[in-house]
Length: 141
Image 1: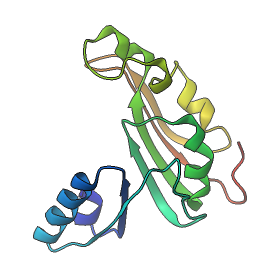
Image 2: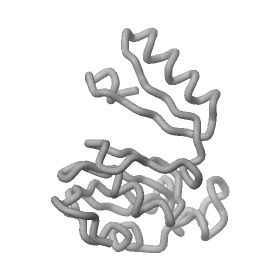
Image 3: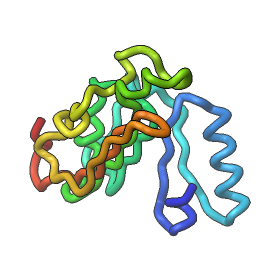
């Protein structure tokens, strides 16, 4: 929503139809439009070289990294934040290592991109965050 309020053209893709409906309603109430697509990204192919910014929060499917990068225009930025193995010290959040990044894994998954910002925090939750820019030419993974 913040990107739409800032004047950006926003496409939101999520599996949760109710969340997308709430987003569209909030955007409309603020005089903004948000294009929404209800889809499972493991089955819905992202367009190539379409987006200037891709934002992923608190979601991890390692197989999607190449298509997320490929969806960026050259010079486009991927903003990614999700849980790390440090989250296991807390009683909430994901418990499966399949949904938790190992230390340094996010940076490694985005090799070939220019890292603009990178951090991993252990409290109040275990998170890894990165901002990385796609270099000109094909994605290098």
